[in-house]
Amino acid sequence: MLDLTYEAPAPKVIAGATGDWELVIGLEVHAQVATRAKLFSGASTAFGAEPNSNVSFIDAGMPGMLPVINEGCVAQAVRTGLGLKAEINLRSAFDRKNYFYPDLPQGYQISQLYHPIVGEGEVLVEMGNGQARLVRIERIHLEQDAGKSIHDMDPNMSFVDLNRTGVALMEIVSRPDIRGPEEAAAYVGKLRQILRYLGTCDGNMQNGNLRADVNVSVCRPGDYEHYQETQDFSHLGTRCEIKNMNSMRFIQAAIDFEARRQIAILEDGGSVVQETRLYDPDKNETRSMRSKEEAHDYRYFPDPDLLPLEIEQAWVDDIAAHLPELPDAKKARFMGDMGLSEYDAGVLTAELANAVYFEAVVNHIDSAKDGKLAANWVINELFGRLKKDDLGIEQSPVSPAQLGDIVALIAKGDISGKIAKDLFEIVYTEGGDPAQIVEDRGMKQVTDTGAIEAAVDEIIAANPAQVEKAKQNPKLAGWFVGQVMKSTGGKANPAAVNQIVTQKLGL
Image 1 (cartoon, rainbow, N blue to C red):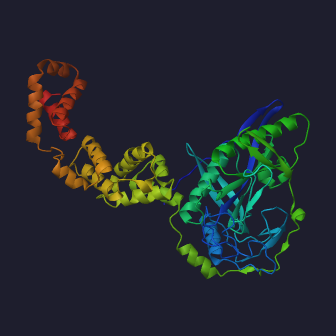
Image 2: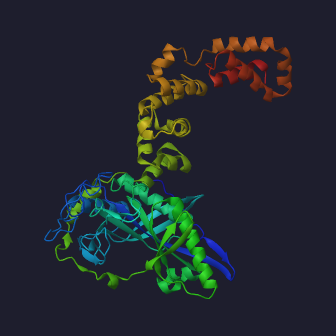
Protein backbone atom coordinates (compact mmCIF):
# COMPACT_ATOMS: atom_id res chain seq x y z
CA MET A 1 0.00 0.00 0.00
CA LEU A 2 1.16 3.53 -0.72
CA ASP A 3 2.67 5.16 2.34
CA LEU A 4 1.01 8.51 3.00
CA THR A 5 2.56 10.76 5.63
CA TYR A 6 0.96 13.90 7.02
CA GLU A 7 1.71 16.75 9.36
CA ALA A 8 -0.74 17.65 12.12
CA PRO A 9 -2.47 20.99 11.43
CA ALA A 10 -1.98 23.92 13.79
CA PRO A 11 -4.77 24.43 16.35
CA LYS A 12 -7.37 27.12 15.81
CA VAL A 13 -6.28 30.24 17.70
CA ILE A 14 -8.68 33.01 18.74
CA ALA A 15 -7.18 36.31 19.84
CA GLY A 16 -8.72 37.58 23.07
CA ALA A 17 -8.31 40.84 24.95
CA THR A 18 -5.85 39.20 27.36
CA GLY A 19 -4.00 36.95 24.91
CA ASP A 20 -4.49 34.00 22.58
CA TRP A 21 -6.79 31.05 23.22
CA GLU A 22 -6.86 27.61 21.63
CA LEU A 23 -9.84 25.31 21.04
CA VAL A 24 -10.21 21.76 22.33
CA ILE A 25 -13.02 19.65 20.88
CA GLY A 26 -14.32 16.14 21.39
CA LEU A 27 -17.35 14.61 19.69
CA GLU A 28 -19.94 12.01 20.56
CA VAL A 29 -21.41 10.89 17.25
CA HIS A 30 -24.70 8.99 17.34
CA ALA A 31 -25.00 6.77 14.27
CA GLN A 32 -28.20 4.84 13.62
CA VAL A 33 -27.33 1.21 13.03
CA ALA A 34 -28.33 0.02 9.55
CA THR A 35 -30.68 -2.85 10.41
CA ARG A 36 -34.31 -3.54 9.54
CA ALA A 37 -35.32 -4.19 13.17
CA LYS A 38 -34.68 -2.30 16.42
CA LEU A 39 -32.10 -3.11 19.08
CA PHE A 40 -34.37 -5.09 21.41
CA SER A 41 -37.54 -5.63 19.37
CA GLY A 42 -38.65 -6.75 15.95
CA ALA A 43 -40.33 -3.43 15.08
CA SER A 44 -39.32 -1.84 11.78
CA THR A 45 -36.74 0.94 11.56
CA ALA A 46 -38.11 2.28 8.24
CA PHE A 47 -38.06 6.07 8.02
CA GLY A 48 -41.16 8.04 7.12
CA ALA A 49 -43.81 5.62 8.40
CA GLU A 50 -47.05 6.89 9.92
CA PRO A 51 -46.46 8.17 13.50
CA ASN A 52 -46.47 5.41 16.13
CA SER A 53 -46.84 2.63 13.55
CA ASN A 54 -43.39 1.06 14.07
CA VAL A 55 -43.82 0.40 17.79
CA SER A 56 -43.71 -2.93 19.62
CA PHE A 57 -44.92 -3.56 23.17
CA ILE A 58 -41.38 -3.23 24.55
CA ASP A 59 -40.82 0.04 22.63
CA ALA A 60 -43.99 1.39 24.25
CA GLY A 61 -42.75 0.43 27.72
CA MET A 62 -45.55 -2.05 28.40
CA PRO A 63 -45.22 -3.88 31.75
CA GLY A 64 -43.68 -7.35 31.67
CA MET A 65 -42.12 -6.99 28.20
CA LEU A 66 -38.54 -8.30 28.05
CA PRO A 67 -35.82 -7.07 25.64
CA VAL A 68 -34.26 -9.54 23.18
CA ILE A 69 -30.94 -8.50 21.65
CA ASN A 70 -30.79 -8.09 17.87
CA GLU A 71 -27.70 -10.00 16.70
CA GLY A 72 -27.56 -7.92 13.53
CA CYS A 73 -27.04 -4.74 15.58
CA VAL A 74 -24.18 -6.39 17.47
CA ALA A 75 -22.57 -7.48 14.20
CA GLN A 76 -22.82 -3.95 12.79
CA ALA A 77 -21.18 -2.48 15.91
CA VAL A 78 -18.34 -5.01 15.64
CA ARG A 79 -17.95 -4.24 11.93
CA THR A 80 -17.75 -0.52 12.72
CA GLY A 81 -15.14 -1.10 15.41
CA LEU A 82 -13.00 -3.15 13.04
CA GLY A 83 -13.33 -0.43 10.39
CA LEU A 84 -12.02 2.13 12.90
CA LYS A 85 -9.08 -0.13 13.87
CA ALA A 86 -10.57 -0.48 17.33
CA GLU A 87 -10.39 -3.13 20.01
CA ILE A 88 -13.43 -5.44 20.10
CA ASN A 89 -14.51 -6.40 23.61
CA LEU A 90 -15.64 -10.02 23.66
CA ARG A 91 -17.59 -9.30 26.83
CA SER A 92 -19.79 -6.22 27.23
CA ALA A 93 -22.83 -5.35 29.31
CA PHE A 94 -25.93 -3.18 29.20
CA ASP A 95 -26.96 -0.60 31.81
CA ARG A 96 -30.11 1.37 32.46
CA LYS A 97 -29.71 5.13 32.20
CA ASN A 98 -32.68 6.53 34.11
CA TYR A 99 -34.31 9.82 33.21
CA PHE A 100 -37.80 11.08 32.41
CA TYR A 101 -38.79 12.41 29.04
CA PRO A 102 -42.18 12.16 27.32
CA ASP A 103 -40.78 10.30 24.31
CA LEU A 104 -39.00 7.68 26.47
CA PRO A 105 -41.87 5.42 27.60
CA GLN A 106 -39.73 3.02 29.65
CA GLY A 107 -38.40 5.85 31.81
CA TYR A 108 -34.86 4.68 31.09
CA GLN A 109 -32.53 4.13 28.16
CA ILE A 110 -30.63 0.84 27.76
CA SER A 111 -27.01 1.77 27.08
CA GLN A 112 -23.42 0.62 27.74
CA LEU A 113 -21.60 3.08 29.98
CA TYR A 114 -19.11 0.90 31.82
CA HIS A 115 -18.59 -2.08 29.51
CA PRO A 116 -18.91 -1.01 25.84
CA ILE A 117 -18.72 -3.46 22.97
CA VAL A 118 -15.91 -1.55 21.22
CA GLY A 119 -12.80 -0.04 22.80
CA GLU A 120 -10.09 2.31 21.55
CA GLY A 121 -9.66 3.03 17.84
CA GLU A 122 -8.65 5.86 15.52
CA VAL A 123 -9.70 7.95 12.52
CA LEU A 124 -7.30 9.77 10.19
CA VAL A 125 -8.88 13.07 9.10
CA GLU A 126 -7.25 14.63 6.04
CA MET A 127 -7.26 18.42 5.99
CA GLY A 128 -5.51 18.99 2.64
CA ASN A 129 -2.07 20.43 1.89
CA GLY A 130 -0.40 17.34 3.35
CA GLN A 131 -2.02 17.83 6.74
CA ALA A 132 -4.16 15.40 8.72
CA ARG A 133 -5.36 14.94 12.28
CA LEU A 134 -5.28 11.48 13.89
CA VAL A 135 -8.34 11.43 16.15
CA ARG A 136 -8.44 8.75 18.83
CA ILE A 137 -11.69 6.89 19.45
CA GLU A 138 -12.31 6.23 23.14
CA ARG A 139 -15.13 3.72 22.71
CA ILE A 140 -18.25 2.75 20.78
CA HIS A 141 -21.30 1.56 22.66
CA LEU A 142 -24.74 0.38 21.64
CA GLU A 143 -27.83 2.09 22.99
CA GLN A 144 -31.50 2.74 22.26
CA ASP A 145 -32.71 5.90 20.58
CA ALA A 146 -35.57 7.89 22.10
CA GLY A 147 -38.74 8.93 20.30
CA LYS A 148 -39.59 12.37 18.96
CA SER A 149 -41.61 15.14 20.60
CA ILE A 150 -43.43 17.38 18.14
CA HIS A 151 -44.29 20.89 19.31
CA ASP A 152 -45.34 22.70 16.13
CA MET A 153 -48.59 20.90 15.18
CA ASP A 154 -50.83 22.57 17.76
CA PRO A 155 -50.45 25.81 19.76
CA ASN A 156 -51.65 24.17 22.98
CA MET A 157 -50.41 20.59 22.79
CA SER A 158 -47.31 18.57 22.03
CA PHE A 159 -47.38 15.18 20.32
CA VAL A 160 -45.10 12.16 20.67
CA ASP A 161 -44.01 9.81 17.86
CA LEU A 162 -42.44 6.59 19.16
CA ASN A 163 -41.30 5.23 15.79
CA ARG A 164 -37.64 5.94 16.61
CA THR A 165 -37.92 4.62 20.17
CA GLY A 166 -35.70 1.58 20.54
CA VAL A 167 -33.85 2.06 17.26
CA ALA A 168 -30.22 0.96 17.69
CA LEU A 169 -27.58 3.67 17.89
CA MET A 170 -23.82 3.42 17.99
CA GLU A 171 -22.38 6.22 20.10
CA ILE A 172 -18.86 6.84 18.83
CA VAL A 173 -16.94 8.82 21.44
CA SER A 174 -13.72 10.59 20.47
CA ARG A 175 -10.91 11.86 22.64
CA PRO A 176 -10.48 15.67 22.82
CA ASP A 177 -8.05 15.56 19.88
CA ILE A 178 -9.81 17.98 17.53
CA ARG A 179 -8.45 21.53 17.51
CA GLY A 180 -10.76 23.61 15.32
CA PRO A 181 -14.24 23.93 13.77
CA GLU A 182 -13.07 22.81 10.32
CA GLU A 183 -11.41 19.75 11.81
CA ALA A 184 -14.61 18.86 13.68
CA ALA A 185 -16.69 18.99 10.49
CA ALA A 186 -14.03 17.04 8.58
CA TYR A 187 -13.97 14.40 11.33
CA VAL A 188 -17.74 13.90 11.15
CA GLY A 189 -17.47 13.75 7.35
CA LYS A 190 -14.70 11.13 7.48
CA LEU A 191 -16.59 9.07 10.04
CA ARG A 192 -19.71 9.24 7.87
CA GLN A 193 -17.68 8.12 4.85
CA ILE A 194 -16.26 5.08 6.69
CA LEU A 195 -19.67 4.06 8.05
CA ARG A 196 -21.20 4.25 4.58
CA TYR A 197 -18.38 2.14 3.11
CA LEU A 198 -18.93 -0.42 5.87
CA GLY A 199 -22.70 -0.36 5.37
CA THR A 200 -23.28 0.06 9.11
CA CYS A 201 -25.05 3.46 8.92
CA ASP A 202 -26.48 5.31 5.94
CA GLY A 203 -25.14 8.62 7.29
CA ASN A 204 -28.33 10.52 6.46
CA MET A 205 -27.99 13.60 8.66
CA GLN A 206 -31.21 15.18 7.39
CA ASN A 207 -33.22 12.26 8.78
CA GLY A 208 -31.29 12.32 12.06
CA ASN A 209 -29.53 9.03 11.33
CA LEU A 210 -26.18 10.66 12.07
CA ARG A 211 -25.90 13.46 14.59
CA ALA A 212 -23.23 14.74 16.95
CA ASP A 213 -22.93 16.11 20.45
CA VAL A 214 -19.99 18.53 20.36
CA ASN A 215 -17.89 19.17 23.49
CA VAL A 216 -16.05 22.51 23.35
CA SER A 217 -13.54 24.10 25.72
CA VAL A 218 -10.77 26.69 25.43
CA CYS A 219 -7.29 26.83 26.91
CA ARG A 220 -4.13 28.90 26.73
CA PRO A 221 -1.34 27.97 24.29
CA GLY A 222 0.83 25.25 25.84
CA ASP A 223 -1.90 23.85 28.10
CA TYR A 224 -2.95 21.23 25.57
CA GLU A 225 0.63 19.98 25.27
CA HIS A 226 0.69 19.53 29.07
CA TYR A 227 -2.52 17.50 28.77
CA GLN A 228 -0.94 15.31 26.09
CA GLU A 229 2.07 14.64 28.29
CA THR A 230 0.06 13.79 31.40
CA GLN A 231 -3.45 12.92 30.12
CA ASP A 232 -4.59 15.16 33.00
CA PHE A 233 -7.79 16.93 31.97
CA SER A 234 -7.21 19.68 34.54
CA HIS A 235 -4.89 21.34 32.02
CA LEU A 236 -7.88 21.87 29.73
CA GLY A 237 -10.75 24.28 30.21
CA THR A 238 -14.24 23.40 31.41
CA ARG A 239 -16.19 21.93 28.52
CA CYS A 240 -19.76 22.56 27.40
CA GLU A 241 -21.69 20.11 25.28
CA ILE A 242 -23.73 21.25 22.27
CA LYS A 243 -26.45 18.67 21.62
CA ASN A 244 -27.86 17.08 18.48
CA MET A 245 -25.93 18.74 15.68
CA ASN A 246 -26.86 17.35 12.27
CA SER A 247 -25.19 19.79 9.86
CA MET A 248 -21.48 20.22 9.05
CA ARG A 249 -21.99 23.95 8.58
CA PHE A 250 -23.86 24.37 11.85
CA ILE A 251 -21.24 22.30 13.72
CA GLN A 252 -18.56 24.78 12.64
CA ALA A 253 -20.69 27.84 13.43
CA ALA A 254 -21.72 26.48 16.86
CA ILE A 255 -18.12 25.70 17.85
CA ASP A 256 -16.92 29.14 16.85
CA PHE A 257 -19.71 30.90 18.78
CA GLU A 258 -19.32 28.70 21.86
CA ALA A 259 -15.54 29.17 21.99
CA ARG A 260 -15.90 32.96 21.81
CA ARG A 261 -18.63 32.87 24.47
CA GLN A 262 -16.36 30.98 26.84
CA ILE A 263 -13.41 33.28 26.14
CA ALA A 264 -15.55 36.34 26.94
CA ILE A 265 -16.60 34.80 30.27
CA LEU A 266 -13.03 33.88 31.26
CA GLU A 267 -11.57 37.24 30.27
CA ASP A 268 -14.27 38.97 32.30
CA GLY A 269 -13.09 37.09 35.38
CA GLY A 270 -15.89 34.51 35.40
CA SER A 271 -15.92 30.72 35.26
CA VAL A 272 -17.37 28.50 32.57
CA VAL A 273 -20.09 26.23 33.92
CA GLN A 274 -20.14 22.67 32.59
CA GLU A 275 -23.52 22.31 30.96
CA THR A 276 -25.49 21.05 27.98
CA ARG A 277 -26.39 23.70 25.40
CA LEU A 278 -28.41 23.92 22.19
CA TYR A 279 -27.43 25.76 19.01
CA ASP A 280 -29.92 28.14 17.41
CA PRO A 281 -28.94 28.50 13.73
CA ASP A 282 -31.36 31.40 13.18
CA LYS A 283 -29.66 33.51 15.86
CA ASN A 284 -26.24 31.84 15.47
CA GLU A 285 -25.87 31.31 19.18
CA THR A 286 -25.83 28.56 21.78
CA ARG A 287 -28.10 28.69 24.81
CA SER A 288 -28.26 26.74 28.03
CA MET A 289 -30.38 23.60 28.05
CA ARG A 290 -29.51 22.00 31.39
CA SER A 291 -26.59 21.54 33.76
CA LYS A 292 -24.27 18.75 32.67
CA GLU A 293 -25.28 15.55 34.41
CA GLU A 294 -22.79 13.09 35.85
CA ALA A 295 -23.21 9.33 35.82
CA HIS A 296 -24.72 9.24 39.30
CA ASP A 297 -27.45 11.67 38.22
CA TYR A 298 -28.76 9.01 35.85
CA ARG A 299 -28.65 6.26 38.54
CA TYR A 300 -26.91 3.84 36.20
CA PHE A 301 -27.19 0.18 37.12
CA PRO A 302 -26.85 -3.11 35.18
CA ASP A 303 -30.01 -3.95 33.28
CA PRO A 304 -31.58 -6.85 35.18
CA ASP A 305 -33.35 -8.16 32.06
CA LEU A 306 -30.17 -8.58 29.99
CA LEU A 307 -27.25 -10.92 30.65
CA PRO A 308 -23.74 -9.68 29.80
CA LEU A 309 -23.14 -9.92 26.07
CA GLU A 310 -20.45 -12.46 25.21
CA ILE A 311 -19.21 -12.97 21.65
CA GLU A 312 -16.64 -15.37 20.23
CA GLN A 313 -13.34 -14.35 18.66
CA ALA A 314 -14.03 -16.65 15.69
CA TRP A 315 -17.23 -14.69 14.96
CA VAL A 316 -15.31 -11.40 15.11
CA ASP A 317 -12.60 -12.84 12.83
CA ASP A 318 -15.23 -13.89 10.30
CA ILE A 319 -16.66 -10.34 10.23
CA ALA A 320 -13.13 -8.95 9.83
CA ALA A 321 -12.46 -11.31 6.91
CA HIS A 322 -15.42 -9.91 5.01
CA LEU A 323 -14.80 -6.19 5.55
CA PRO A 324 -14.87 -4.13 2.34
CA GLU A 325 -11.93 -2.06 1.17
CA LEU A 326 -12.16 1.18 3.16
CA PRO A 327 -11.69 4.70 1.76
CA ASP A 328 -8.09 5.27 2.89
CA ALA A 329 -6.96 1.95 1.40
CA LYS A 330 -8.92 2.54 -1.80
CA LYS A 331 -7.51 6.04 -2.16
CA ALA A 332 -3.95 4.76 -1.67
CA ARG A 333 -4.54 2.02 -4.27
CA PHE A 334 -5.88 4.47 -6.84
CA MET A 335 -2.79 6.64 -6.31
CA GLY A 336 -0.33 3.74 -6.37
CA ASP A 337 -1.77 1.54 -9.12
CA MET A 338 -3.08 4.23 -11.46
CA GLY A 339 -0.89 7.20 -10.65
CA LEU A 340 -3.80 9.43 -9.66
CA SER A 341 -3.14 12.63 -7.73
CA GLU A 342 -4.20 12.72 -4.09
CA TYR A 343 -6.93 15.21 -5.02
CA ASP A 344 -8.39 13.07 -7.82
CA ALA A 345 -8.23 9.91 -5.70
CA GLY A 346 -9.95 11.79 -2.88
CA VAL A 347 -12.78 12.96 -5.14
CA LEU A 348 -13.32 9.46 -6.53
CA THR A 349 -13.40 7.81 -3.09
CA ALA A 350 -15.42 10.49 -1.28
CA GLU A 351 -18.59 8.46 -1.84
CA LEU A 352 -18.65 4.69 -2.27
CA ALA A 353 -20.94 4.97 -5.31
CA ASN A 354 -18.38 7.22 -7.04
CA ALA A 355 -15.57 4.74 -6.39
CA VAL A 356 -17.66 1.80 -7.60
CA TYR A 357 -18.54 3.69 -10.81
CA PHE A 358 -14.91 4.66 -11.47
CA GLU A 359 -13.63 1.12 -10.98
CA ALA A 360 -16.29 -0.17 -13.36
CA VAL A 361 -15.07 2.37 -15.96
CA VAL A 362 -11.47 1.20 -15.48
CA ASN A 363 -12.60 -2.40 -16.03
CA HIS A 364 -13.66 -1.40 -19.57
CA ILE A 365 -10.34 0.11 -20.63
CA ASP A 366 -7.33 -1.79 -21.88
CA SER A 367 -4.85 -0.90 -19.17
CA ALA A 368 -4.66 0.62 -15.70
CA LYS A 369 -2.13 3.05 -17.18
CA ASP A 370 -5.11 4.82 -18.71
CA GLY A 371 -6.56 5.28 -15.21
CA LYS A 372 -5.60 8.96 -15.20
CA LEU A 373 -7.49 9.50 -18.43
CA ALA A 374 -10.51 7.66 -17.04
CA ALA A 375 -10.34 9.72 -13.82
CA ASN A 376 -10.30 12.97 -15.81
CA TRP A 377 -13.40 11.94 -17.74
CA VAL A 378 -15.30 10.77 -14.66
CA ILE A 379 -14.45 13.86 -12.58
CA ASN A 380 -14.49 16.63 -15.17
CA GLU A 381 -16.98 15.51 -17.81
CA LEU A 382 -19.38 13.15 -16.04
CA PHE A 383 -19.48 14.72 -12.55
CA GLY A 384 -19.60 18.18 -14.07
CA ARG A 385 -22.57 17.30 -16.26
CA LEU A 386 -24.40 15.45 -13.47
CA LYS A 387 -23.96 18.44 -11.16
CA LYS A 388 -25.32 20.75 -13.84
CA ASP A 389 -28.38 18.52 -14.23
CA ASP A 390 -28.71 17.96 -10.45
CA LEU A 391 -28.33 14.18 -10.77
CA GLY A 392 -26.56 11.66 -8.56
CA ILE A 393 -24.11 9.09 -9.87
CA GLU A 394 -26.80 6.41 -9.53
CA GLN A 395 -28.94 8.38 -12.01
CA SER A 396 -26.19 8.81 -14.60
CA PRO A 397 -27.51 8.41 -18.19
CA VAL A 398 -24.00 7.21 -19.13
CA SER A 399 -23.15 3.75 -17.78
CA PRO A 400 -19.62 2.83 -16.65
CA ALA A 401 -19.35 0.54 -19.67
CA GLN A 402 -20.25 3.36 -22.07
CA LEU A 403 -17.81 5.83 -20.50
CA GLY A 404 -15.14 3.12 -20.39
CA ASP A 405 -15.63 2.54 -24.12
CA ILE A 406 -15.27 6.29 -24.80
CA VAL A 407 -12.01 6.40 -22.81
CA ALA A 408 -10.76 3.28 -24.61
CA LEU A 409 -11.47 4.89 -28.01
CA ILE A 410 -9.42 7.95 -26.97
CA ALA A 411 -6.57 5.79 -25.63
CA LYS A 412 -6.40 3.78 -28.88
CA GLY A 413 -6.32 6.97 -30.94
CA ASP A 414 -9.60 6.20 -32.69
CA ILE A 415 -11.05 9.58 -31.65
CA SER A 416 -9.58 12.88 -30.52
CA GLY A 417 -10.41 14.64 -27.27
CA LYS A 418 -12.66 17.08 -29.11
CA ILE A 419 -14.58 14.32 -30.87
CA ALA A 420 -14.80 12.44 -27.57
CA LYS A 421 -16.68 15.36 -26.04
CA ASP A 422 -19.14 15.33 -28.93
CA LEU A 423 -19.48 11.56 -28.53
CA PHE A 424 -20.05 11.91 -24.77
CA GLU A 425 -22.87 14.39 -25.42
CA ILE A 426 -24.52 11.98 -27.86
CA VAL A 427 -24.30 9.06 -25.43
CA TYR A 428 -25.49 11.22 -22.53
CA THR A 429 -28.57 12.49 -24.35
CA GLU A 430 -29.38 9.64 -26.76
CA GLY A 431 -27.62 6.55 -25.40
CA GLY A 432 -26.11 3.89 -27.64
CA ASP A 433 -22.85 2.02 -28.13
CA PRO A 434 -19.96 4.53 -28.41
CA ALA A 435 -17.94 2.48 -30.90
CA GLN A 436 -20.98 1.97 -33.16
CA ILE A 437 -21.85 5.69 -32.98
CA VAL A 438 -18.31 6.59 -34.06
CA GLU A 439 -18.57 4.15 -36.97
CA ASP A 440 -22.06 5.13 -38.08
CA ARG A 441 -21.48 8.89 -37.89
CA GLY A 442 -18.01 8.96 -39.39
CA MET A 443 -16.39 10.33 -36.24
CA LYS A 444 -13.26 8.20 -36.39
CA GLN A 445 -10.00 10.11 -36.13
CA VAL A 446 -7.99 10.53 -39.34
CA THR A 447 -4.60 8.90 -38.83
CA ASP A 448 -3.72 8.51 -42.53
CA THR A 449 -0.63 10.73 -42.85
CA GLY A 450 -1.23 11.11 -46.58
CA ALA A 451 -4.64 12.69 -46.02
CA ILE A 452 -3.25 14.91 -43.26
CA GLU A 453 -0.32 15.99 -45.48
CA ALA A 454 -2.75 16.98 -48.22
CA ALA A 455 -4.74 19.11 -45.78
CA VAL A 456 -1.54 20.76 -44.47
CA ASP A 457 -0.29 21.48 -48.00
CA GLU A 458 -3.60 23.09 -48.88
CA ILE A 459 -3.53 25.42 -45.84
CA ILE A 460 0.13 26.37 -46.41
CA ALA A 461 -0.46 27.11 -50.10
CA ALA A 462 -3.43 29.34 -49.29
CA ASN A 463 -1.61 31.39 -46.64
CA PRO A 464 1.92 32.38 -47.83
CA ALA A 465 2.06 35.48 -45.62
CA GLN A 466 1.27 33.42 -42.53
CA VAL A 467 4.01 30.96 -43.55
CA GLU A 468 6.64 33.73 -43.48
CA LYS A 469 5.43 34.89 -40.06
CA ALA A 470 5.61 31.35 -38.71
CA LYS A 471 9.17 30.93 -39.96
CA GLN A 472 10.14 34.07 -38.05
CA ASN A 473 8.12 33.09 -34.98
CA PRO A 474 7.70 29.27 -34.68
CA LYS A 475 4.98 29.71 -32.03
CA LEU A 476 2.65 30.79 -34.86
CA ALA A 477 2.75 27.23 -36.24
CA GLY A 478 -0.17 26.53 -33.92
CA TRP A 479 -2.34 28.60 -36.24
CA PHE A 480 -1.77 26.07 -39.05
CA VAL A 481 -2.54 23.18 -36.70
CA GLY A 482 -5.84 24.84 -35.79
CA GLN A 483 -6.74 25.41 -39.44
CA VAL A 484 -6.01 21.79 -40.36
CA MET A 485 -8.11 20.53 -37.46
CA LYS A 486 -10.91 22.84 -38.55
CA SER A 487 -10.73 21.70 -42.17
CA THR A 488 -10.90 18.04 -41.12
CA GLY A 489 -13.78 18.59 -38.72
CA GLY A 490 -11.53 17.84 -35.76
CA LYS A 491 -10.93 14.31 -36.99
CA ALA A 492 -7.22 14.59 -37.76
CA ASN A 493 -4.82 13.15 -35.22
CA PRO A 494 -3.47 16.27 -33.42
CA ALA A 495 -0.02 14.78 -32.80
CA ALA A 496 0.35 13.83 -36.47
CA VAL A 497 -0.82 17.29 -37.55
CA ASN A 498 1.73 18.99 -35.27
CA GLN A 499 4.53 16.83 -36.62
CA ILE A 500 3.65 17.35 -40.29
CA VAL A 501 3.11 21.14 -39.90
CA THR A 502 6.50 21.51 -38.20
CA GLN A 503 8.15 19.44 -40.95
CA LYS A 504 6.47 21.28 -43.84
CA LEU A 505 7.32 24.73 -42.42
CA GLY A 506 10.92 23.66 -41.84
CA LEU A 507 10.81 24.63 -38.19
